[in-house]
Image (cartoon, rainbow, N blue to C red):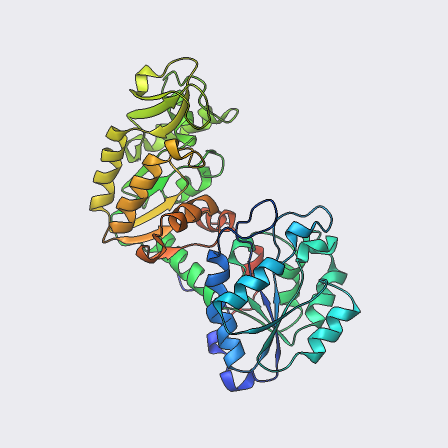
Length: 396
């Protein structure tokens, strides 16, 4: 299925000079409690689009959210993002003092060709998340045209995502088009065999994706916290391992329809406490002690998943297979991630946690595609409409 929306690449480059181009990006990379960036994958991903517009001598109005500010806490400012953008490029970037108001309008009008104006965190204005029509009109007034690049936020009905593109000429940027084309192929025409590696804590996040992909997959290798819902559904004692309320019943239904395609752990690492240096051991799944926690997949499970990965032509990985925040419990995730990266298959990773593991292991360049979207990628693979995509005009 082709991505049939208007694209930046189709817009005549000679017509961009002097145009104010509003680029809604997702620059929401991970940061520490002080707001210092600890990663830059999303910033790097949007550089080709910004560079294209700068070289075409457009005036770039760059906008993004960053975290979930309640007021205007300084750790949610985009100052650190501006600094990283400047380190990674030769762009001349001005940071606006706000994301609304007369000063922002003035700066947008004074911007010179080939320069970038970075608005302050859009979520500093309540109108952004409330999808306020007046705030959307204000943002639209800053640009002559709109480029959608915030794939990671495309599932949200926010002013800059789903309303602004309906108000001025709009199109998809390079990153957004790549994201949709990659996931479209995965969903509608994957090279077979297709193997899905699914982890993370919640079954509820993955149910619809599993349902939408199950007829196309050769196997789904399940690990992480969600595997314990399936193991509980099969009658295993899982100790103190995490299971969402009522999700074992949902897991039982999924297994009943597609049990042969879903591969569950045969052994797991368990720990007395969820903390670094806790006492831990590997046990078979029928030997989990009552007061212990499941924290990672075991070596037999790693080998079982490796066998599936080795025969795949397409691999989609979403979610860690253990508690990766604690190094002692991250072994299964790191080893399986390495097997996927070294595979000759088409490899796609989706989800913020997964992307962070891929980046931390320096495997980015070994994956066919590392999606910048977590919830958005899952929603797309569920078959759901994404407001930020639906708002864009069709190609004529």
